[in-house]
Amino acid sequence: MSKALILNGSPRGKKSSSASLAEYMKILFEAEGIESEIILILTQLNKGERIKEMVQKIKSADFVVLFAPLYDDCQPSIVIKTMEIIAEEKMNLSNKTFIPIINCGLPEPEQISEGVTPIYNQFAITVGFKWGGSLAIGGGEGIQGRFGKQLDEIGAFAKNAIEALNDIVQSLVSEIQYPNVEIILVPKIFYKWPLVNLMTSINTKSWKKMAEKKGEKVDAQPYLEE
Ligand SMILES: Cc1cc2nc3c(=O)[nH]c(=O)nc-3n(C[C@H](O)[C@H](O)[C@H](O)COP(=O)(O)O)c2cc1C
Picture 1 (cartoon, rainbow, N blue to C red):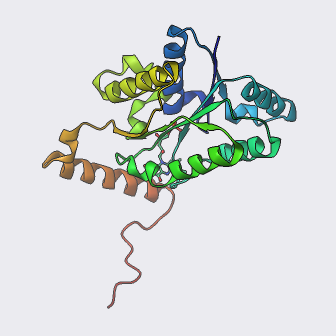
Picture 2 (picture 1 turned 90 degrees about the horizontal axis):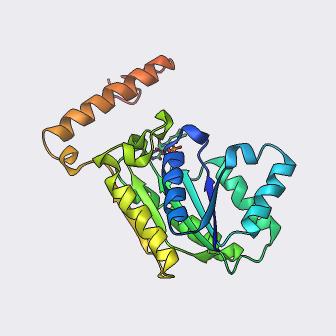
């Protein structure tokens, strides 16, 4: 029986969009008779013993699926640490397929495809994983995994993610290469006038409020000529 190891690389741990996506993928794997397990990178890196345990689980998996958020056009540090651990172990990974499934807060998935996907790809090549394709999810913040909802309980918002996860599992089962795919969860109507203006204005107000709370002068214009 094939085994899938699902790594949740979100620093939010169980209360993350990555967790919600990972839980759903586990259900899909099990429906195909693929034994699967989710581990939280955050807690796994706590102790030397747990790191060894994670390495062991990678060694015995056929598919290694990484769920993680985009942080400042990069990987969260716990994911970078995990990539370093895998590289240092110098394991034989040639029979294991690696797939990164990355979500970001803003709607544009190209932030992921043009930023971290090539890094994950280079990582896979360097350590010897088989590249199984990738999924870039724009607007992942809206999945609201942190409120404990399963993907199929969120409604139409999660439709594209559900379809893509299904496609990935089917590609793995039928040994067909999955491509590098981008999806957007935010409905297209939000990109059109007048909603796009309304959303931009709401977002700007909310960013300003957050910055003000942290003591920033949000309307400062330090480079404005007198
Ligand atoms: C430190 C930090 C940096 C972030 N950088 C980006 C970014 O560059 N682009 C973006 O669209 N979202 C960014 N986000 C938003 C997260 O990618 C987004 O909230 C994501 O849905 C979190 O996924 P998770 O719940 O699986 O951790 C950032 C969030 C944090 C905390």
